[in-house]
Image (tube, rainbow, N blue to C red; front, side, top):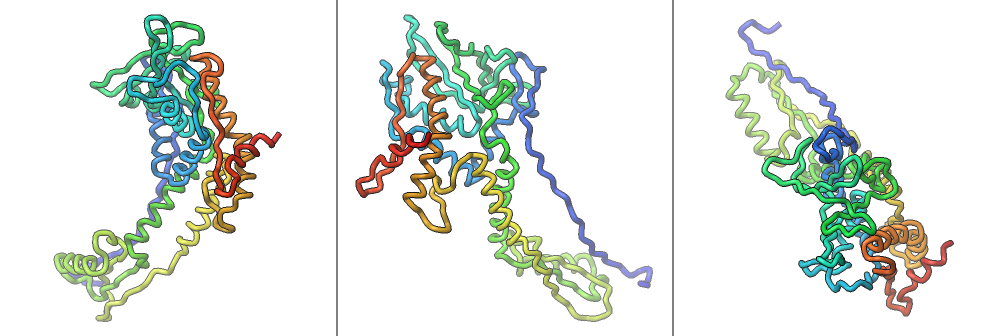
Length: 370
């Protein structure tokens, strides 16, 4: 037993369990007309943050946008530009398509002139859009908070666009086919957990790099528990300064013991194989994400086993064009035809120039799948 005046230093390890809750698109009906989108009214912001922080999501979204827009958006209306900013239909659709891929829906403002003709179309960031229970009013605010609009900001209220009505200022609101509520559901909804994991895997590897892949270690200062507190603090500071640095702090645990031996020992903690576990997890997560988007990784330019293969790409794209891209393109064409009338725009299919006289081969073969 140590003497009563002897200081005893105890070292212990605490295991902390960290949980990550995936937000739910809960709707709250207790607001001033508009309905919350998500428990904190920030659900679209959450979806956008996944797009920003997941390289796989970002890559897939950009690829889908290119395929959906095709080679050219041909304008058959009497508008050379769609708004006073000088944007054309391709500029507008580029933004709307990205919102469709990320949120599952999109919105744009429709302004008529004094004759009742369409004069202007303006993109509306879908994160700013809310609607009411009847879905006949559209509320737009750039700074939504939980159940109220942020103080000092203005919520603009528009009538929802109605086919055949001569509304001077309205908003076309599209929520897709997958939802049973007033707000859309993105096509990748089943892969939200995998998208979260993909961002955490990147963080894991970043920390490993910052820590120079240094294994965890415990340094025992035997017979050091009687040292004054200021001496212990100085020793700890010197060790971290020499072996860790700010980016590597916490990799080494110091222990001042009552051991009778006057030697300092260094013990390496056994490798737990986290790197291999993360590699396996990464493969599983990647497959889940690509499955949710219904896209073959070959179409994003990835095929680590065989390299890029023209035939494989063409066959994969033919199926993808038929089952995913064309239906989405038709949704946009139908939406604009409700505003301008039939055959107002045309989207020419995406083609690839192989440089060997095979330009357009992908697009031509896309119609062969029945």
